[in-house]
Length: 220
Image 1: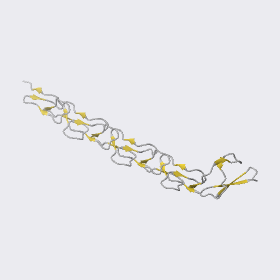
Image 2 (image 1 turned 45 degrees about the vertical axis):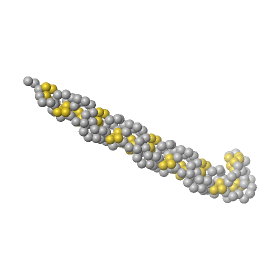
Image 3 (image 1 turned 30 degrees about the vertical axis):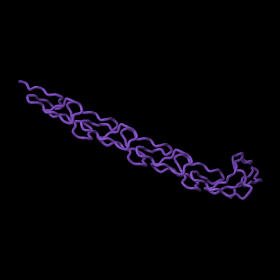
């Protein structure tokens, strides 16, 4: 169909062809002689509108197709708008006909940006996620972009999910996996080395208090 531009005196009219939404005319942009603004060259024949290709949008007018911005897409031809990528998907390119699913070990919170690897102390074992998961209590992850966390080993404590295991100090032990603290050796026992999974019983004729790293000889 057509649109009319008129002069300031309202005495002169010019007709310009306007394509329907989702279509465009392959015409040339010129200055409107009446307003000085950018318009479209008059179509002097019966034009055949071209359908807007996938990855672009064509609004009401004869303009060339507009590529979809990054973070959006147009999956089929004849679109008059671009659709934002769904949550957990991304698209860094313009003119896209689809979005990419966020890979495991990453998060996609900003749709025009590439996937961001999970930080230390985090993981993501599923695709299509906007956030990463924090390692559970007693587990850790010291590398970025991981799909799982590591269970804290025996003889260690894991208080922070982004720190490596800390060996139990002398006088303490840990006989279980996945723990955030170490336990003090009970009275009458000791641990003289770091990373112990058990305590030693004081030999006959000696004693110790709680959390001892050695035993004392009993007084005569």
